[in-house]
Length: 440
Ligand SMILES: [Zn+2]
Image (cartoon, rainbow, N blue to C red; front, top):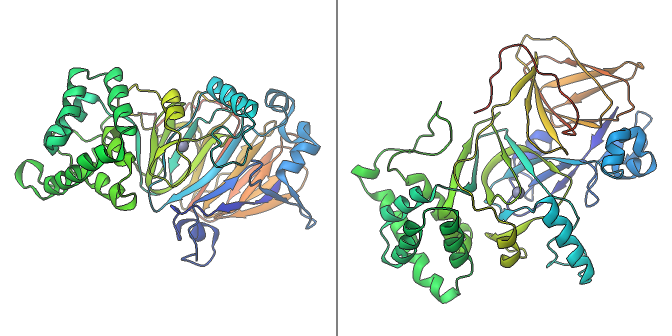
């Protein structure tokens, strides 16, 4: 059981306040702080802070003693690597429009680029490791995203509402085939569009978004996220949010083909504590907000726009999943009196949230046997190990629990207290007989 020191990634889309506030550093930071990485990714591994003042890279510690840190099953299954990467992600501006490969696609793509001799740090390299990268994001603040293709019939309605003559052929294309094939055709047409063709479509589309927002009557009234419904997708004829998103994207990435492509995607709003799972092939981007993200320990990203980074459209098209419909929003499942789990099919990771309201103080026992990271996002907590060791973790702080460490008792400080717990998906979590908030 050791406290962790973690690296901050300064991508340009990052917030200057959210991560510094969490870490208790000066706000605003002089540069964007986009992601805090907790784990053992070779590009930026966390550091173990030992009680005697010594420090070891977690990556190095895993190399030296994989069985102690990961446990036999995990060490063998993932060849001595930590299977997950935990992040705090703080977006001030939209991220690139992206998708991640499946396990087979990643293995094949990695081997192909290795075979062609593309250096692993080359900007045009797509597959930096042979792993897939399913991911789950849990909102800490309201988090807005575009994720997955919207029902194409609904997109036809959106294009009708915009009523742009230059968009008419594309609307007809999708209306004739309102399914995954139609989406593939239209998305491929747009994403591969020559600049001249795009200049004929994009300005009119943006004007139409402005006009729709100004229009009274039909489109009047503010967009409200439907609560209690199954999905975070607006009903009825109101496309104000979609128009706002398109205009914001065009402002940040003028002339970018991703702006048009964004017309096809679901707009998702996660409230604090709500999560969304993004399987392989799901086209997505986060627009704004702060969340805790957990993914397989990979950096394989295929980009299609909204970025100055390398874009590889043919490769993106190879991995994209054109199935459509709103993505389910997870509220988690109770697995303990103070613990809620976000379950996915990924065997590399699972994420739980531990919470105590003000005045609650019941300790929780955390069984070891699996490698785990605890991240405190509110209040503080003390961890007592059965061998007598103890550490205090405060907001922004994190702890590494090795598989061979003894069990730990987690005692919340003065409330409210919140921690996230990352562990392999293979690790069994008990189902709690108490009331479950369920998942939508
Ligand atoms: Zn992603």
